[in-house]
Length: 405
Image (cartoon, rainbow, N blue to C red; front, side, top):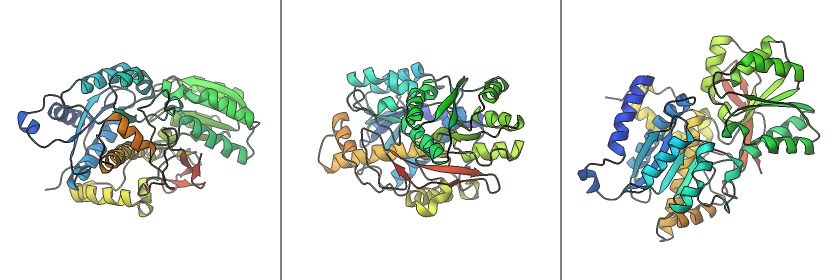
């Protein structure tokens, strides 16, 4: 009997809580007696403003773990996933981290869930080192001197803004607005973006800060109308606000072209908005470091995961995995590769040796997650591609080559 792929929110959180109790720190003695596994601990925003992305990402991550374990795990040992809800509150994520690091069975990797957490945890990592990645592309983290145990599984937010501003420049754009959420995530690349724009001869005519969810959209549209930019970059959002801003601008008959960064480039959201409110997202574009899952023909890693999900869920599996989940899986693929490199070098698997292995990733074939071979520089991977949304077929399609920094 195949398992049900779809879970409603209540049943998912209920099952998540039960699984957390099984997988976290009250481990039964029978499990303790088994051969050692790789503990990978993490925080997920299962409640709060980004709960939809967190819940979906967790489910696909656990399937990725099951698939990986079914083919031998990592260097012959299985992964034991440990996770807690953070509600997208950095202090709660930090408490989760401390709990994981105080356990008898300490993790070899910790996955963070926000820019705020990744900045907050740095002093703790110096006291209790562990290789640490996550959902943040914060530019501050791409510095091995100040953040020696952290890495970014893609380009920094600064690099994403660079790509978008260069794209705007290539199209003759002169007047640009930045619209971003009042979060560490949202504010991260803004100062850099202003400097980059100036160097390109682009005027930033508006910097508009909004709530990450439940924003007063029409108030922000009024500011946008007064500024009248040719382009607007939306940043610091996942499921909400960015579509409402675009929809409000279209109702106001504005001709502004909208661009987004990775977390605002999800097909599920764009499709839902189009179904409910019409095709106003036509032409919306943005930068993403990873191929979309429907590009599986160019990505053997996607094909492998597709086959696993199809085998497990049958027709319940819709054939698509979100960009949110792809980002999480790629982060753990990088951690997996670092562990394998360390084991193959006959070194102890600890934070310092894993970082050394991470820094040795050069020209790696990611199996199609990214379009070019992957090299880690300054604990980041400066690679991305611009995609544009087509309402006629519900797909983000590439409008640029793969760009490396």
